[in-house]
Length: 259
Image (tube, rainbow, N blue to C red; front, side):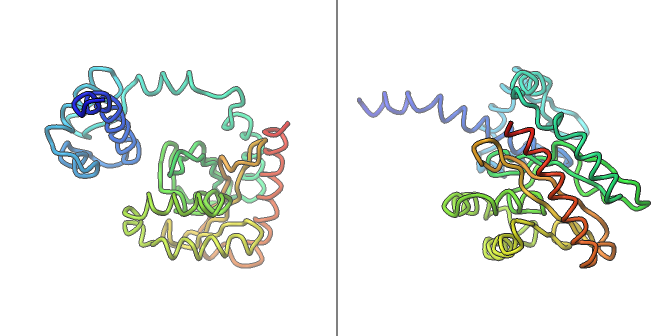
């Protein structure tokens, strides 16, 4: 095939890849006021290319531009998401057990799913303790390995896959005061505890969280559940009790997932 034909054949795929990257950047930064210059820099694109792609995404209703808050995901993304729900809706089937866990611990309980190299918050349920840790909201995205939920998922993956993830997310880790080396150490500690991930203050100041992975029928880690509370409430004895309740919750959800 002539070089010109090869370039022409690759261009649509490259454009789709760039557009998908812009959507991921916008989804990952929904709490920030993203401007064109910010998105272009994060995607390593020149402003004119980023602007053309964003304009097309706006036309297709995948992105909207708020004059105050900047670029946001558009309504078509929500519509496509509804159509893409799996037959077994993890958020729906896990709800009773998550509610029971929040009631038993009194603390905030989170469900996070795996999305590529990131974790995404699918649900959060408050307990009855007077101080609740709102460390995540639904839709929040972070690199795998960040926080107890993302760490639990990453630690459950095969070593080769972990290396692939770390290579992809390494440029983003300094923003979390983390490194690939520190995450590998946390993975080692998580596995030594029987696949119980503990994050003490790195994801959120003075917050301790305990997480465990959810596996599908094939044994693939697809999500995790974690409990978060203020640091001085999560002393050793309480960590053991929360872990016991967390494991019971995850086992109950997996029973339904794998049936």
